[in-house]
Length: 237
Ligand SMILES: Nc1ncnc2c1ncn2[C@@H]1O[C@H](COP(=O)(O)OP(=O)(O)OP(=O)(O)O)[C@@H](O)[C@H]1O
Ligand SMILES: [Mg+2]
Image (cartoon, rainbow, N blue to C red):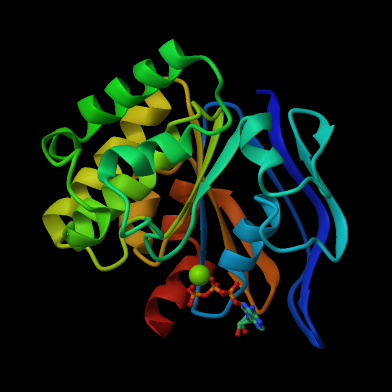
C-alpha cells in the first residue's frame, strides 16, 4: 500500500517541555489508524504539528511524498490534509452553513463547494435541518458533527480527527464510529486520536500507542486489542 503520511523523528516542544520526543509513524492510503495513549501523552501535539498548528521542532512530516513540515496552517488543507481539532472548535457566532463554507476556503470552484456541502448534509442530516442556526447553539454532539463536516469540506485525502467521540452520548459515539468507517469505505484515509480505546480498535486497521511523548507500541488493531501494551493501558485506566 502507498504511504500517504510519514513522520520521521518528529519532536514538538513548548519552551523547555518536550511533548513529542522523536516519533516515527506511517499512514497508508485507505487505512484507519488510531493514535492512543493517556492524557498528556502527546497525541494532540502530534496532530497539531502535522496540521501546522504547532511547529515541528525537529524531524520531518511527509504527505504524499512532499515535505509539509514547515507549511503554514492555511496551506496544509490545500495540500489535501485536514484536522478536526480537539474540543469541537466551531465558530459559535456563525451559522452552520457559514462554518461549512469556512471549511471550504481552500476550494475556489463553487460547484465543488456545493457538492462537498451536499455530501456533509447527506452524512449529517441534522446539519441540513439546522443550516441557518448559530453553531454555538447546537448541542455538543451536533457541534462535533459540524467540526467533522467542516474538515470534510475541502475533500481531504487524509482526515485527522482529534477525539471525535469526546463528550458524546454513547449512541452518538457509535454513529461517529460508523461514519468514520463509511468515510474510509468511500476512499478517505483517517488518522484518529481516541480515548475510547475499545471503540477505536473496533474500526481501526492499525494503531500506535503513545506514552510520554514516544511511540511505545504499534500493530494491527487485532494485535493491539490482545497485546500487553493495550492490556496494560486498559488496566491502567
Ligand atoms: N500550548 C502548550 N504549552 C505548554 N505545554 C503544552 C501545550 N500544549 C500541550 N502541552 C503539554 O504537552 C504535553 C502533551 O499534551 P497533548 O495535548 O499533546 O496531550 P494529549 O495526548 O493530547 O492529551 P489528552 O488526552 O489529555 O488530550 C502535556 O504535558 C501538556 O501539558
Ligand atoms: Mg489531546
